[in-house]
Length: 286
Image (spheres, rainbow, N blue to C red):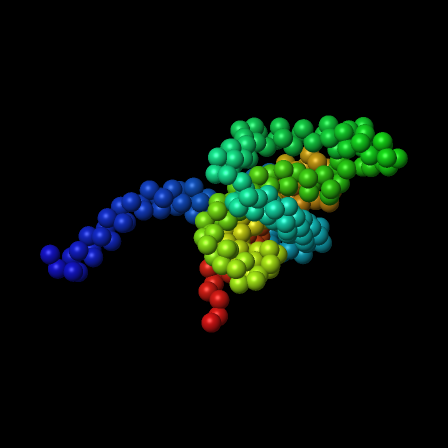
């Protein structure tokens, strides 16, 4: 068999195995995305969508101050949640990867997965008891003469919800990434006189860059599109883009305008995702 025929067979074999995921993406992602884009050019008249294919919805949404205030607030909160979650997760991930036994690490990762056995909505509602004015946090603060503080229906409540959603996942992803590092390289850095902090930033973080960036990207995507925490813990004030989509679709059945907001969200996520992946896999200059 010639080399060209062998290569053709290998390509066909690979295509057959890739076909299910390609069909899945076309059916459940590309198809709905194209429908969403087409819907944004419809108009609603008498509570019915009419094909007009003009830019009226885009002009109306993008010219409104409330859209841009929601956009920048959502972007800022998701970015802040990503930074906080990454910083909070790293010490725990570092300890699980380098400071505990393999058996302890397995049990810790199991308990990090356990929260996902429960609905995210249920976990969010549990914070009502903790963050309320008569809740656990204010009761503890009262012992030292502080409070009560309002934490529900504020950006603080929204941020707590975001961290509830992403922190266990981020610890898992960081731990898996850090545990793949060759520990001989860390010992070599110590032998060459590198301190612990310097080793973390000059050896461990660069070697685990892909995993750390991908984990942060997951955190940003989940926070940026989350509806539950801003609605139930943040009180919908200020309004995030996910809440704006719900409110827009309810206002006179304006699904095309809601589609515009959704497309803006997805475009932002695509840009940030491609930029993050490019940065994660970029080779350092020699």
